[in-house]
Image 1 (cartoon, helix red, strand yellow):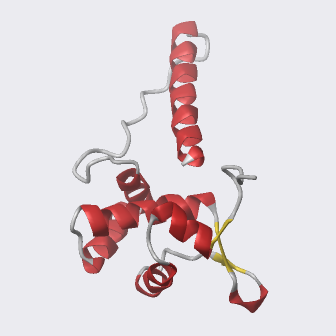
Image 2: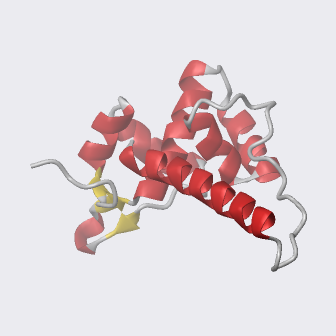
Length: 133
């Protein structure tokens, strides 16, 4: 039976999902302070869905985009984890991560509320897509 999208992954499951050896994930933990899987008794690692999303971005930047470890560290320091997650989704590094929020609409403005609802549904669809990966 397959695990659900919100389930934690063991290191072997994470390695299989990311198509990297387990020792690479352990090495990345030593080089990237933002990679912190949950550890149970005995040191067994469990990766949250958010950890997998960040690791997917790190993998893409290092293996596909030709970044160095220092380059990924700098990108995370300057632009945050959202940028790494976006890179894992295939968003080019030079592209903005997300469009700026529109100015707040008056509460009585039905059109503004419908627009805000549409924006929230779009964001939810993107999050659901992340969780399915």
